[in-house]
Amino acid sequence: MVQVQERLKILLEANVITKEASKIAAEAADRLGAQAPQAPLDMLITHLATALTRLERGEELEAPPESMFKEVQQSVYLQNAMEEIRWVENRLGSILPEKEQKFLQLHYVSNFQQMGGRSL
Image (cartoon, rainbow, N blue to C red; front, top):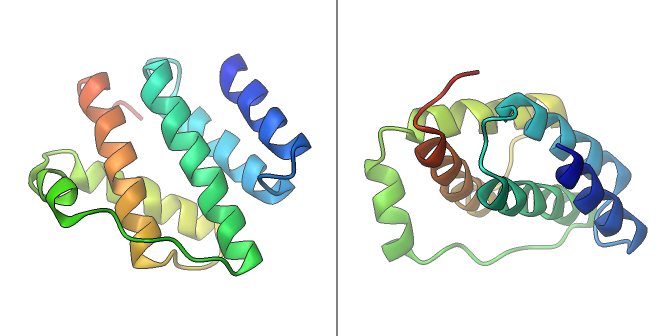
Protein backbone atom coordinates (compact mmCIF):
# COMPACT_ATOMS: atom_id res chain seq x y z
CA MET A 1 0.00 0.00 0.00
CA VAL A 2 3.03 2.25 0.22
CA GLN A 3 2.99 2.76 -3.55
CA VAL A 4 -0.68 3.74 -3.42
CA GLN A 5 0.03 6.31 -0.71
CA GLU A 6 2.96 7.71 -2.70
CA ARG A 7 0.88 7.93 -5.88
CA LEU A 8 -1.93 9.73 -4.06
CA LYS A 9 0.52 12.11 -2.38
CA ILE A 10 2.03 13.08 -5.75
CA LEU A 11 -1.42 13.66 -7.26
CA LEU A 12 -2.51 15.69 -4.24
CA GLU A 13 0.63 17.85 -4.21
CA ALA A 14 0.18 18.54 -7.93
CA ASN A 15 -3.45 19.59 -7.27
CA VAL A 16 -4.68 16.86 -9.62
CA ILE A 17 -6.87 15.44 -6.84
CA THR A 18 -8.46 16.83 -3.70
CA LYS A 19 -7.68 15.85 -0.12
CA GLU A 20 -11.07 14.17 0.34
CA ALA A 21 -10.67 12.22 -2.92
CA SER A 22 -7.23 11.07 -1.79
CA LYS A 23 -8.59 9.92 1.56
CA ILE A 24 -11.48 7.92 0.07
CA ALA A 25 -9.21 6.38 -2.60
CA ALA A 26 -6.72 5.28 0.08
CA GLU A 27 -9.54 3.68 2.09
CA ALA A 28 -10.79 1.91 -1.05
CA ALA A 29 -7.28 0.53 -1.66
CA ASP A 30 -7.15 -0.72 1.93
CA ARG A 31 -10.44 -2.54 1.36
CA LEU A 32 -8.88 -4.56 -1.47
CA GLY A 33 -5.91 -5.45 0.69
CA ALA A 34 -2.36 -6.56 0.03
CA GLN A 35 -3.42 -9.32 -2.38
CA ALA A 36 -4.45 -6.75 -5.01
CA PRO A 37 -1.96 -6.69 -7.92
CA GLN A 38 -0.11 -3.38 -7.99
CA ALA A 39 -0.64 -2.27 -11.61
CA PRO A 40 -4.44 -2.66 -11.73
CA LEU A 41 -4.71 -1.31 -8.19
CA ASP A 42 -2.76 1.79 -9.22
CA MET A 43 -5.08 2.33 -12.19
CA LEU A 44 -8.18 1.87 -10.03
CA ILE A 45 -7.02 4.20 -7.28
CA THR A 46 -5.85 6.86 -9.73
CA HIS A 47 -9.16 6.75 -11.58
CA LEU A 48 -11.19 6.74 -8.36
CA ALA A 49 -9.33 9.73 -6.92
CA THR A 50 -9.63 11.71 -10.15
CA ALA A 51 -13.30 10.74 -10.51
CA LEU A 52 -14.10 11.99 -7.02
CA THR A 53 -12.15 15.16 -7.72
CA ARG A 54 -14.09 15.70 -10.96
CA LEU A 55 -17.31 15.44 -8.96
CA GLU A 56 -16.10 18.00 -6.43
CA ARG A 57 -15.05 20.34 -9.21
CA GLY A 58 -18.16 19.81 -11.34
CA GLU A 59 -16.24 18.34 -14.29
CA GLU A 60 -17.58 15.59 -16.57
CA LEU A 61 -16.12 12.49 -18.17
CA GLU A 62 -16.87 10.67 -21.41
CA ALA A 63 -18.28 7.17 -20.90
CA PRO A 64 -16.10 4.18 -21.80
CA PRO A 65 -16.75 2.63 -25.22
CA GLU A 66 -19.60 0.12 -25.06
CA SER A 67 -17.39 -2.55 -26.66
CA MET A 68 -15.06 -2.27 -23.65
CA PHE A 69 -17.92 -2.44 -21.23
CA LYS A 70 -19.69 -5.54 -22.64
CA GLU A 71 -17.10 -7.91 -21.18
CA VAL A 72 -17.46 -6.27 -17.77
CA GLN A 73 -21.23 -6.76 -17.88
CA GLN A 74 -20.66 -10.51 -18.34
CA SER A 75 -18.07 -10.82 -15.56
CA VAL A 76 -18.71 -12.96 -12.50
CA TYR A 77 -17.02 -10.15 -10.56
CA LEU A 78 -19.43 -7.40 -11.57
CA GLN A 79 -21.44 -7.79 -8.36
CA ASN A 80 -18.25 -7.49 -6.30
CA ALA A 81 -17.36 -4.34 -8.23
CA MET A 82 -20.82 -2.89 -7.60
CA GLU A 83 -20.48 -3.58 -3.86
CA GLU A 84 -17.26 -1.59 -3.80
CA ILE A 85 -18.79 1.24 -5.81
CA ARG A 86 -21.72 1.35 -3.37
CA TRP A 87 -19.20 1.54 -0.52
CA VAL A 88 -17.54 4.52 -2.24
CA GLU A 89 -20.92 6.18 -2.72
CA ASN A 90 -21.85 5.61 0.92
CA ARG A 91 -18.49 6.98 2.04
CA LEU A 92 -18.90 9.96 -0.29
CA GLY A 93 -22.51 10.55 0.67
CA SER A 94 -23.75 10.73 -2.92
CA ILE A 95 -24.30 8.57 -5.98
CA LEU A 96 -21.63 8.59 -8.67
CA PRO A 97 -22.67 9.45 -12.23
CA GLU A 98 -23.22 6.44 -14.48
CA LYS A 99 -20.17 7.25 -16.62
CA GLU A 100 -17.92 7.23 -13.55
CA GLN A 101 -19.53 4.02 -12.31
CA LYS A 102 -18.80 2.29 -15.61
CA PHE A 103 -15.12 3.18 -15.50
CA LEU A 104 -14.89 2.06 -11.88
CA GLN A 105 -16.62 -1.20 -12.79
CA LEU A 106 -13.91 -1.79 -15.41
CA HIS A 107 -11.15 -1.17 -12.88
CA TYR A 108 -12.70 -3.13 -10.03
CA VAL A 109 -13.53 -6.13 -12.25
CA SER A 110 -9.94 -6.15 -13.51
CA ASN A 111 -8.65 -6.16 -9.94
CA PHE A 112 -10.98 -8.93 -8.82
CA GLN A 113 -10.10 -11.04 -11.87
CA GLN A 114 -6.40 -10.76 -11.13
CA MET A 115 -6.98 -11.44 -7.44
CA GLY A 116 -8.96 -14.55 -8.33
CA GLY A 117 -12.11 -13.28 -6.69
CA ARG A 118 -13.28 -11.35 -3.68
CA SER A 119 -11.62 -11.90 -0.33
CA LEU A 120 -12.76 -8.83 1.59
